[in-house]
Image (cartoon, rainbow, N blue to C red; front, side, top):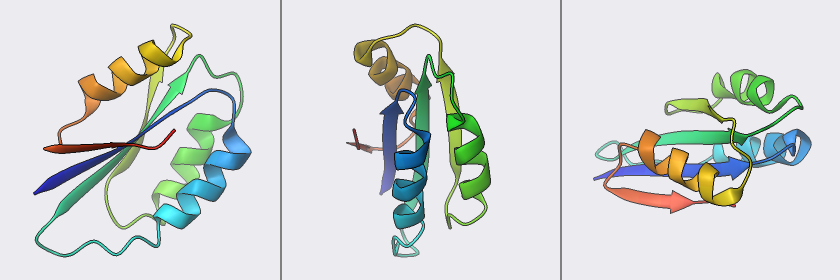
Length: 92
């Protein structure tokens, strides 16, 4: 079973860092594959940098996708387009 954790966000790098630190502690059984995708929705802060810095501590693939069009619907649609998992878990 594959799981995609999807986080649409807009200029909340500090809170995002805290969330990523907690997600790094997630215990994933070996038979499951997990990916983490943060969608930076028209961000002007350090969102992409926060993901890049925390990705090394996360025991599964983690990346940031940019969505330049503001709005949560655009961010969620970008997350859906980027996700590869069978199960999609939005963490807003």
